[in-house]
Structure formats: C-alpha cells, structure tokens
Length: 444
Image (tube, helix red, strand yellow):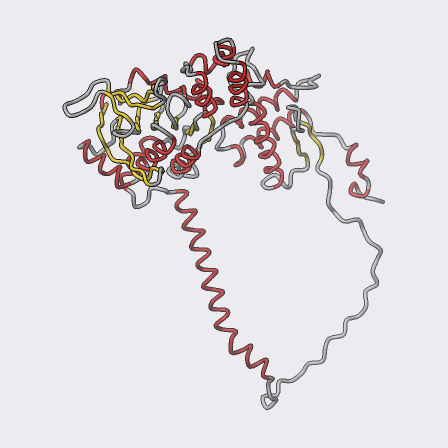
C-alpha cells in the first residue's frame, strides 16, 4: 500500500485544521521571533489572519488595511501612500522565514500570495523518499588484521604528515577559537551595547524601555524636495492627510514643476546622512528590546503617543517635529527666500545669538516626553543630512555624553535640548561641539 507521500492527491484531499486551529497557528506565527520586534507587522498579520478566517471572505482590500491597521483616513490616496504594499512585502518574507526555521516541522502552513492580502492555508508536502526495491543483504567479510611491525619502515609521506599534523591542528584550533570569540563578543555587544560606557548607559537605559517599542523614524526627503520645488512649507495636518499634494497641484507652479513634484513623491527618498544616523542609533538599542525602523510618511499619531520615538531630521523632512515646536527653545527653520537652514534661539542667554546660521550652529538634539507622557522622544535635526548624522554621533559618544552630564551637574539626565556646531572635512560632518543647552528637570 502506498503512503500519502506516494499519492499527492491524498495529501490535497486530507482536510485542513479547523478554524480554531488555524487561528492558533496564526497567533503562534505572530508571537514568533520574526514578529517580536515589529508591532506594525504583528498587527498586520493578526488583522489579515482574522479577516481570512471569516466565512465568505474572498479578498481583503488594501484601503481597508491602510485604515484599520495603519490608521490612515478612509479616503486616503493609495497611489501616493503605498504603506500597505511596502509592509506586505516584508510580511510575506517574515511568514516564509518562520516556516523555514522555527515552524519547519509544522504540518500545515500558510502564505499571503503576491498581489493579495488573504492568507491561504495548505498542508506541507511530505519529503519522505518513496520505498525502493528490496536489497539482498550479502555477508560482509572483515578485512584481515595486519599486525603492526615496529621494524617496518614508514614512507617519507607518512613522516611529513606526522610532522605537520600537530602544527596544522593547532592553527585550526586557534582560528576556530578566535572566530568563536568574535561571535561571542558581537552577540554580547548586541545584548549589552553600553558595557564600559557609563555615560551612554545612564542616558539610554533611561530613554529605552524593554517592554515598550522604540521607533526610529527616518526622514521623508521626498517631501523635503517637494517643499524645495514649491517653496511652500508642509504643515503636519496636511502631511498626515496628504492634502499638501492637492495644494501643490492646484497652486501656481508650472505644469512641468507639478509633474516634477509628482515624480518625487512617488519615490521614498532618504539621504545617506540619515541612514548613517539611524545605523548609529540602532547600535544603542539592545537586541532584546522591541524596536522598529520606519519612514516618516508611514508613521502614525498613535505610535508617537504610545512608543518611545527617535525622529531623525528637521521639519521639512519630518513634519512630526511640529508637534514639539512650542516646547523647544532651539528651533530648526528654513529660509525659503535664500534657500538655507537656520536655527532660532527663542530666549537667548547672555553671549548667545537669537539666530544661528549653519556656520555658527548646525544641529539640535532634544530629549522630551512623548505627547501622552507615557514614553520618551528624541529629536535630531541638522541644517543638512550630514549635520544630523553628526548629532547622532554626539548622542552615541560616551565622551560627549559624559561631558554633557558634567555640565548638567546631575547624576541622572534630565530632559534637555542641546545646540551643536558640527565640524566638517571635505564637506562631511565628523564631529560636533556643544554651543548651548537647556534642561527641563520639571518635566519628569
């Protein structure tokens, strides 16, 4: 009698698990390592999973997911905001990763086919080999024992092998030990990035929370370029609702310039300086802490109220910065007439300027509570992307952070703002020096 492996039709005919069992499988995948660091993808999977199990569900629409999972308004423009498609690609990869690793033994698997958002369940095909024809066992003859003759001469090749065997084995063992040491050190640094860095440990352990997600938000440089073309700032309300696109298209720009704006906004542009800053800041988050990397245009008001958040970039590329404008003393701004970034000092102290050009000060770091006072916010804004990267380097330097703590005359970092001047070499920022600061101990 053949097995199920011999009969694919029998595998296909075998009934799938019940709805409850399929829901348990979805929850198991959502709770796996692949989804533990991304609340957004975790919620995405649970939503499409729950909808897929509803009787009569033939399809789940992109607009519905954008509204229910990502907090977009019901009438948002999917052609200008592709948040669902971008995250769906990553969701499919993580589902496949789970069933190839931790879920490799699961008899039932599911997938979300490309171009659709409904989960499809199927039984995993068996890989057992088909039974082969019986093999006649033959008696095995033992080789004759050869007595060792101490007088028997050894060959030159044998002597060479014996001569080099120990040194080669020693070198291999040393290389293996070095590799294991480096792997262990890398893992240890990922779990405890602040070891032997007391100032960084004091700051980042206060900012982060092992039970609260930290979102690193990269700038939407497409929006920044659109502002440069239209010479019109984009407010946070217009950015969230995407109505700024309509305002630009109905404005006085030429047809060619309007087409340029559309082309720019159809791409997710991010500068190298912002990526460098994000990479440096990610290195300060222990691997076991929940965290996510997002683009400003795919971020939501719910996340900024709920999570710890690091906003990388100024208001032109990160309109979410407008939420904190009224709390800040050092405010990044842009002179659209002259096309240059400036920093305003709302309440100058003796010796300080009211307006800092990029040559005098080029970056601001602000550490504040989030809008709901349940988590923390870091804003890094520079006069350009390189200055923003230098601000991130300042925030990840134990030397700079220790100097800052000494100036605060406090064991614990209060909420603060710092104004920095970045030093350049061949056009690239490589260091930042403190120009001025403010502390807000009463916000705690």
